[in-house]
Length: 371
Image (tube, rainbow, N blue to C red):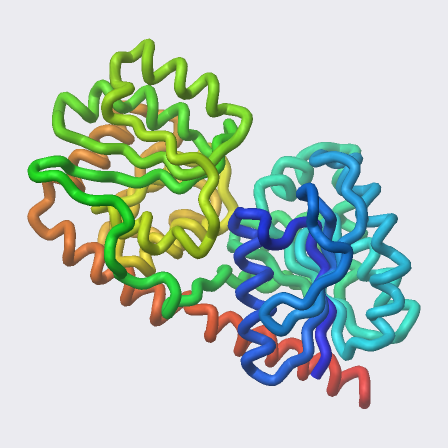
């Protein structure tokens, strides 16, 4: 089987969607599928074409990281998408910005089209009158529509009544993300938490910063590892100094995906103070590394986190967030919660399970087309 994937961003870009598409592609290759990816030249120095982990990757221009830039990239990618669609058995658009070029490629070559709707960008635009008819058309154009969470699936079905959308939680490579030796040394009596979040407002890291004075009252000897970068970083660094908690907050910046298991192993639990979330691949990766998770009760997070492996707290509530983190850090059964978190991911959200379901969908669509 031959599969063409289209996604605006792809590694070495770092993020949940990027990880999802790369792991899906790698898993498909391991199952004997030929995979090609159309994506963007989003970082300086990236080659136009390369083979990576057995996947042929073609990059086309991305003039800016916003809706206009995504649209321009989608249009610029139409020629190669259409040409490679003729090679493929199935065309798969990852996220809504990929659907237009994939639809043109699939319809022009008679190939089935799968579309997966991810991320808060989809949710935010679904409520805007200008975007609703556009997104409705994109959902309706797919032969099989997927969503990264039940919330996104319900929103997509509301945009296109009568068109079913399958909720399929993203997966994790549970062999790569597992308990390993810590990258950072521990110190006697120091407790550690990790916040693997890009520093954008929607990820709520500023809520955690506001919670730190309260948290340090409960857990005075605390190390907070903030992994990720973004436009909020200067404001957050200023705020930790203003609050007098700079000694506890360690901004580690952007790190490569391969570094993450050892960095996660340097902490005892992970925190996701999101204001909006689809299904967090990063949270699943933390759980696969046997870390309990404290997360906001938003989006797809309640679908993966419960009291057997962590805590859910109200969003935008520093007091509740501080209390939830302290409660877990002081829980004598913390390690057992982490062990259950890993078991939960292995049983429900492994990348192998994700790849198997995608193959079922692809084969069904190809068989239907053939008939």
